[in-house]
Image (cartoon, rainbow, N blue to C red; front, side, top):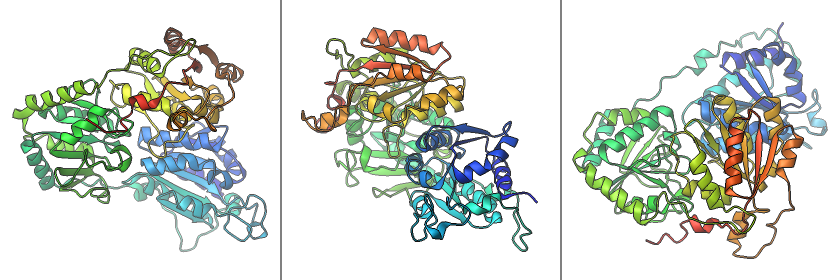
Length: 564
């Protein structure tokens, strides 16, 4: 009779899984021999922490559209591993979590250490995961492990995508699949097959009419527009009719930001041009964007005001249309499908030149695309200079991952993304330490593209062991550490007082060399440019530790006041 663990591996293959990310423990360890039997079809990527494994799985799912699989032992899946699960939950990334109750062959009720059954003396991994997933199944019988996985993959892939989990009662993992009697498992395909919802043609026609009659329509492109097909259609429709394209944080890079319809990313930490242009709109068109307060200056009515603007919202989930703001024109469906239908209608093309002139004027008045000419103090590099170097050095085949903090704000506010889909950002919980494992996963998904990560010294220290995974798994990435010796954004927000913001010095180049990578320290823009060029062709993971001026403040490129 086959064992449960063999059936689990077969089900993963049946669901199309070709990679799984883990730091194994207990129940997952018991399965590794079965994974080894299929290593030519399913690659197990070993990381140095559950946080790294969970982020790699989340980014894999985000970039491929197929669930990334994160496996680990219960106590750490629900704690350190929750980092990537939460990111997947808030960002809508397909992900499947596989874990166990860690109860050591049935000792859960005895309070055995690490146990996660939810009994007295134990913690409850099922309840923990249920708070941050679309679905969490609890398998206490072998056949439930198979069916639970099938349901998890179904939930993870259906709109709105997100993480789903299966918790295994540890003792069943090594059990044989007994005759189930009336309970029969079936092949996965029939559970996963679905027909996508098609948009209502009448709703699309109504949206087209609204665009045609609008004086200043503005698109807000969000995460739902971040597919290759949708990105191309956004550019085509917007250019044809002269519709301004602003983006949410998750949507940055949906269009070439040097194009004449682009006006930048919205929000307090976004481009003033995008914020002001949205405020001028008579028609707001949200494409796969939640209209969340975080990128609309916390419901600043100078940007969106339902009393003076018509609001249209296109979303694949009807619950999201009219979630934050009341909408006049809800359209339910995939953004790409809606745009494809919209392109067959007249969209006020005769007003194109007037609309484009308004976009140019606002972009010029608010300095969109102009990187501040700042110079770091002696022996340091200003964050402005880091942006300028990347603006010159980024190539169309590069992928760029960001992390959190002041360095990210400079990048998202000032760096115009010329290649749609090039930017990968933490847009769910947006936590520090995400960028490094994200870059590793990005290189795994795109092995022929150069993966560059920009990260602060705080975030780099959190997940520096990702470098070892990059060496072990042959995933060469380039890491630019903006090392300002502390928490730059926190320093800025404290307005000069430095309490719990300064770190002891770390030589990240030396740490990198100790992990088998290249490591170099630079303190000039020219040094950074040279190091990036060398890393591009080295074929090995390279860490460029940049001495950044601690006085470089994100406030300079933020829109806190919202004044004209």
